[in-house]
Amino acid sequence: MSAQREWFEKDYYKVLGVSDTATQKEITRAYRKLARENHPDAKPGDTAAEERFKEISAAYDVVGDADKRKEYDEVRTLGPMGGFGGPMAGAPPGGGFGPGGFSFSTEDFAGGGGFGDILGNLFGRGRNAGPSRGTGPQRGADLEAELSMDFEDAVRGITTTLHLTSEATCHVCKGSGAEAGSAPIVCPTCAGRGVIDDNQGMFSLSRPCPQCAGRGTIVEDPCHNCHGSGVERRPREVKVRIPAGVTDGQRIRLKGRGGPGRNGGPPGDLYVTCRVEPNALFGIDGKNLTITVPVTFAEATLGADIAVPTVDDGKVTLRLPAGTRNGRTFRVKGRGVAGPKGNGDLLVTVEVAVPAKVSAAERKAIEALAAASTESPRAHLGVEET
Ligand SMILES: [Zn+2]
Ligand SMILES: [Zn+2]
Image (tube, rainbow, N blue to C red; front, side, top):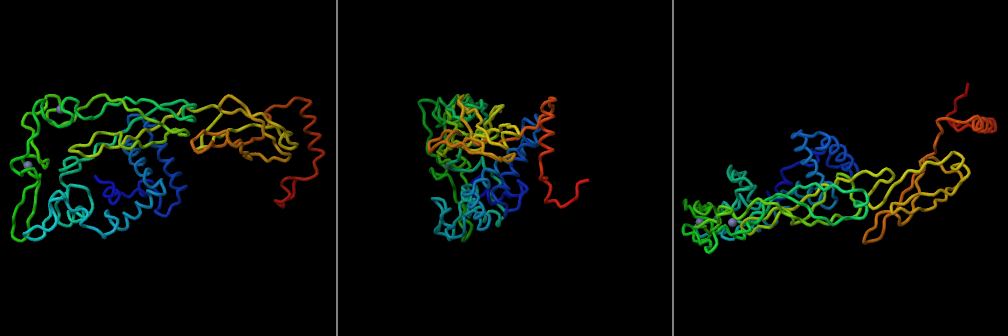
């Protein structure tokens, strides 16, 4: 199914449970929540949840990206052609204006989306063929894979090999479908056009050639390995480069690394869902790393120099100013995720630690502090203390 057609038919906002005016932030929040709830790890064996998870991911792939979302909104408003400015752009090579009047080829209806799809619906015919049985070049399947990595790999990025079992071009016939020593021949029924014409008065309608199923060629002596399909299932190794700074659950699209196309179509894409082992100290937030550092009340009040670990086993000294409030975040430049366009930062959030137990000496000191305090932090609430 073409992306545009899919976009036209699917309401990704509805899938994510947001309105079409939602901000990117709201969309991301909705996606994260749904992805967590329906994640295969959270509901092992629940195929409905798995389906839902795929749907959510597909929706977020589009509307979670500001640029793609803009295109999507356009398609949704104007139709799959992105407006009706150029309907003939969708016409097949053999279509257009035939001698007997206006000629449509059924390739229009099964093929690349666009104008033909709309007409197909209007005419009450067309897409019964389904995406996998269309004629002409077909794009390969999109594949899903999962990749587990430790935190350091996620921070630095990783080049690795994925082992997949998937459809691949048949290694015996190299995709032609013909047995060694033979070659596909031009289909005698359609003379290689892939379509045949039905003349019905002023309309000349074309339909896919029944003998060659629209390919235009026939394999007389099918390949023994793939039985003429040109594809086989086999283990495949795909080298992938995962960029630095991926977070757990993030899905990365590797263009053209999916299943092979048929009849000269382009390959599909490979989607890799990253599983990142959590780290006890650090979190990742895009290019930045995060860490929470406990400080004492005295350090926050009077100021202090605090040693903060960095992800490369080093440390930095953070100068806490006097009067630092609880929850304040400091930015340590350049100590986050390393990237080609410069490093991210380390975001240090201080958390004033409240001791669960105090010694007698501490209790005395804290009581002395309380007695010496003249201002209540609740003065602005305007209620009398009892
Ligand atoms: Zn073969
Ligand atoms: Zn034919």
